[in-house]
Length: 174
Length: 100
Image (tube, rainbow over all chains, first blue to last red; front, side, top):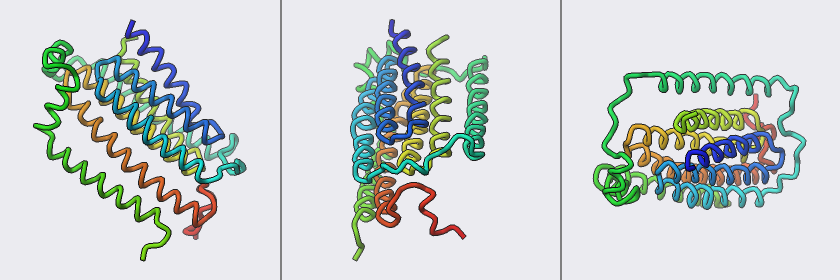
């Protein structure tokens, strides 16, 4: 049952992605992206990455996209005249380049799937994660023991980014 | 089709859509959304590999990527506000001060 739901969510995400790229109205793009992120959050939850699913919905669909919608409302974006147009050579160049990248990535995926010498699998099987006490417990155990330096560095990055955003959004730097 | 294969293909597809949004659109806001879409595709790839190889490192990496995306969008949007103040528009074909 879970597998079928994952497939439906994947199809829905693929469909919403087209709206993000081709919709003329920025609001349509933003809300399609919110829907896509919620779909991805559902997929993460169904394949066992519960903490990442929660982060996806709270941080991505909740915080980042609200910031985008605020930015759209801050600037009046009613002028549609200078958007992309079918028939321009740049449109076809962009489509061609994206298709080429898709072919490269697809051949990479194909090589991975058909490779028989896969790396040895780790210890965190579904049953082992359940024994430890769930995905969040296992993940936080790793995060605050093995990866704590990266955790501290990323907090420093957030501090720098918030100061930079403040300076940039001010009207004049004295 | 097996779930892992579907998710790997979806990841590649979403990455290409993000790239297309970045190349095709003239609206800077939607170009930023394209970058977010590419980051999401990479996150999906991380989680799928983490599930296939029974490891947690991929999920930890996603944690860092999401934090990075939040910082990136905060800075990107404040740069956008500045572009809007200086040019009165955020379309890339209006911001032509550096064109020779």
